[in-house]
Image (cartoon, helix red, strand yellow):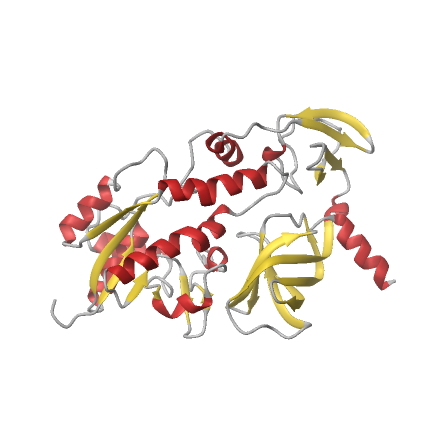
Length: 355
């Protein structure tokens, strides 16, 4: 291995990180695996990962981050849910925990770079969407420090998921057909995300009334189970489709509307904005994505340091406080922040101001 540059690879035992490690070895890197223990009920590395690293002669560093994960990710997310908001724990975790610990471990190993199996690309200046738009994960990485990006490598960035699985099959990897994980860091089968987070944070649910047209039409078991724009799931029949219009964090009332247009919003604010590139000019014509699976929408942005006002070309529906709004210039990730004031009132106030 003399003369080969060392690279630390974040590994989970899944097909993506395993394929990334082998692709980097083919490029001539000396690969060292790093895995983080995050799930409170898991105290050792994934057995499949341990076998893979042993078979491939890849050293594996195991970092126990369960306490930090609980304190810095689980509890804050639980408090957000219990305040009637809908956070993105993965976006927060990547910033405050995962990449911070991975970078620390990589540098302690003397690695020249840190790699992950994310479907995302870099261009020397910042992050870009992955080549496989169906798997692109740049949305979840918008909070990464701009200074960290040159240290990162994403060997799957130009590949599609089928291509990665085909590579894994050709290499006879046991994980070639392993299903993708969903919220594997804290998920419990049969339990909702909000329920899991509240239970692990030791927070009681906050039940309340459900109203429509100013009248009480039912009750709910906790605002942590409800999100703006939600249709159904409340056990309430009004005879017509109904949507969650507003959640009052003070008295825990949930207000329904039967007209979807009442969820329309064309202006909202991002707070705690992290810019991956140079600050865009006021009024810059860009795109905003308000959920991981939502279609990017044309918008104009008006940045103010860690805040940014967003005005969209067309109405967006169910813009949800707590969710991440991520800004793009075509496939270049510009930055993003946490959605605030993303309620119908913002839209109405803005429209009145224009009239």
